[in-house]
Image 1 (cartoon, helix red, strand yellow):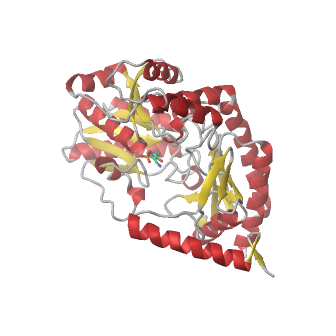
Image 2 (cartoon, rainbow, N blue to C red):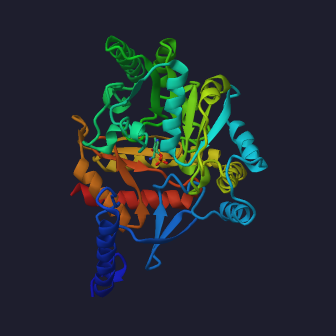
Image 3 (cartoon, rainbow, N blue to C red):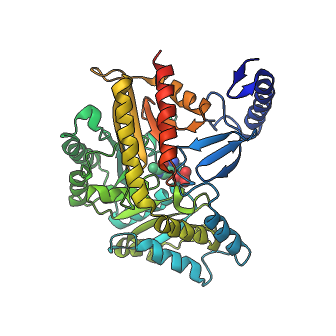
Length: 440
Ligand code: PMP
């Protein structure tokens, strides 16, 4: 009797039928815009710590999800949500300490000048609000983003997210700059190239009668292919933008909350100070909470003339979850763990590169890791189909990762921050074997 994935043919057939029915039902109910991960989509029913479980009880090591960052169903977050939901859940139009306690705790993780926070439910809303604030403050309209940026799904922000697909048309007020890709542009060149591109974009906007408002950049350039190095490369471009009167909006939806290592925020690696920071994803470990942090002067201009109310944004339950996440990051020393285990994994990937020709580049900051696969190290020709095989091969081996970049040839690996070394080792072993299979 042959076994697939630890199950008999009959099991696999039964499961296959169940999955087919679910896929069909999804398409019928949700339409075609939703995408599923993996050639054999995963039917998840439960999460605990670093593991997700499917309907058969098989467990999968979560090295992908940047939401349940402190661990799936972390008891302290669950407890905080339940306790607050059982006591009070209203909104921001009543006096309530929870939102203020959380705001204080959150703002304490930022440089002192960034001293105001506004709450939203999603990262998209946070970027949308940040853009409105920046436009109000500068009186400008133009926005500069990277070529394969992703910033979210609202009307304004989806137009600034070219990675969403061919259906996105860049608006007249947007300009793109080359992604700061050290592997392809050269580590010594990225800072100057980015600064030069920003300068040119500003000039082009002005030449077309559009006043620039903001430079909007993802703290780790995730959709552009996970581009963290060399730390500091942002400084020159940000200086150019600010000298020209633009605000720098740091999109920390992916790169925040210790994801990039010892420092809480991705922008800190670059030694720059944003005017506005947007937050989301792991902020509530799954409870919808996101936000905008900015200098008082920037936010107050906007707030004085535009009333803001977001029904669910910053509600007591979401703030309780957010507070629990910050507590856990501190109590479990997740910043240090992100730094140390991230570096351990990068070393491990580099050892794999000695045996697997497919690996062209290993990069990352903390626990946000990228492994670029190429068919030829000389020409750096992207190995897109092999990347797909590795991602699916990992899923079959019980480890969840994905791919990033315009050509989807970069393994995007974001282990939950509560990984232990044994989980990192399991990830490395599985990758070794999946790479061997993908090479042939
Ligand atoms: N910015 C970045 C960099 C993101 O990766 C995402 C989500 N993937 C968003 C913004 C949007 O966040 P949300 O999905 O919560 O709207």
